[in-house]
Image (cartoon, rainbow, N blue to C red; front, side, top):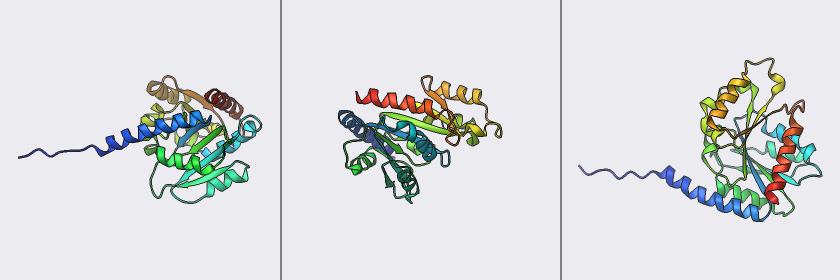
Length: 222
């Protein structure tokens, strides 16, 4: 019997996207735009964290947000109401963004005064981690109510992230969230990852995160 020829389409797609992402990353570097890919599960507080950061960004960096969702424009309207330039990206049912989709979003801003663009990726701990968007930095948000075991369950997300932000720490007294165990899981996967603890609701820890991101943006664009 003749062997069946098996073609690994996923591998081919990822290789093509990786090359496209590197081209986009260099293009943004040349244009002095720092792109951050923000990932998390739904409801972890991505949008509320960005709004909390805004007050510390004012006067220091010029920024905008690309809101990616399967449908709706709720988050983009929320960011615009907070005074942050925003556009909405609809994926048509896809659970992630790739480099070309991201490029379309960046170009849709049609302005040259932004130092920093945040891609608020689809709420999902699987697909977004698999695709390089061309970002200079990947940041993952983990909220306390989700539990401390998420890094063990979704390792790739934490392996590809440069920064982990643990949100909703004001809820620590209510939930059985083991910070030491969570950090152990994360460090085993990614020893160099930076970890911040914040509450977007109360503002605790937000300034420290903002200062780090401002310094990162300025260094990237230098």
